[in-house]
Image 1 (tube, rainbow, N blue to C red):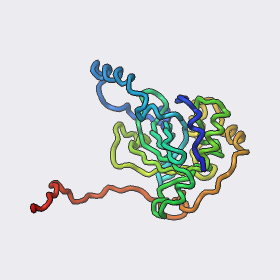
Image 2 (cartoon, rainbow, N blue to C red):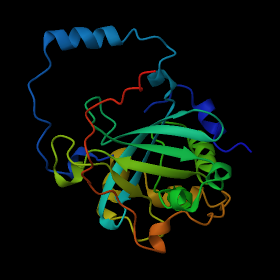
Image 3 (cartoon, one colour):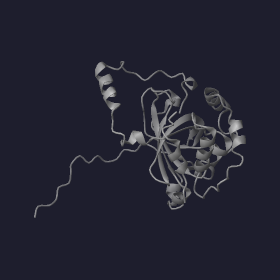
Image 4 (cartoon, rainbow, N blue to C red):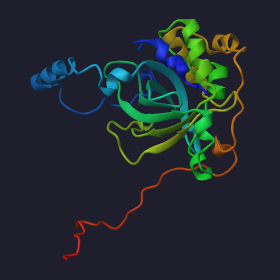
Length: 252
C-alpha cells in the first residue's frame, strides 16, 4: 500500500506561527559572531546525504494543544520521507531563515496506525479534515503537485510534540513538550489565524476546499482523534529518583 509517494516527486521544492500573529519579544542573545558565521559558511558544504538534504516538502497548517483548543498555532512542516509508510517533519513558526524550531511531527500510513496498541493510538490525529477543508497547504509548488500531495496525506496519521510554546510569548523553549492535535470539523480553527495565513500566501482556503472536492474521503480508523471521545492526553512534569551511580557487574 503506497501512502506517501507524492513527496518523492516534489524535488527540492522547499518553500508555525506567522510573525504577525504574536507580539512576543525576539529570542534573547547577542548577534552572531564572526566565528559563528564561519561555522555557518562551512555548513553550506555538508555532504548531500546528511539528514537535512532529505527534506523535500513544506506544508503549512494549524494545530492546537491537546485539551486546549483555544490555544492554536500555525505550523510550518519541513518533511522527509523515511519510507512509503513513515515520514518525519521539523516544525517551525515561520518559513523564514530565522524561524524558530518549535516541534516535531511523525506521520504514518493507515496500515501502520492500525497496528498500534490502543493507548498509543490516543497520541495520534487524523489529517482528513485539514486536507479536505483546505486548511493544509503546500506553499510554492504547482497546484497539480499540491493536490497529489494532499491526496496522499489525507489518509495518514500524525503525532506532534510542540517543544517551544511561542504562542504564550516564550522567548526560549520552556517546560516540557506538549501533545498537539489537528482540527476535525469546520469552525474549530480561529478565523483570524486562518485569514492571516491565507493572506500571507495570497490564497483562499475556500478555493482549496473546492479544488479538493473530488479527493477520496478516507475512513478515520478507531483510536485516532481520541480527544473527541475521552479526556485529552497531555504530558506533565514528574520528579523521579535520580540514579547517579552506574551499576557494576559483580566480581567473579
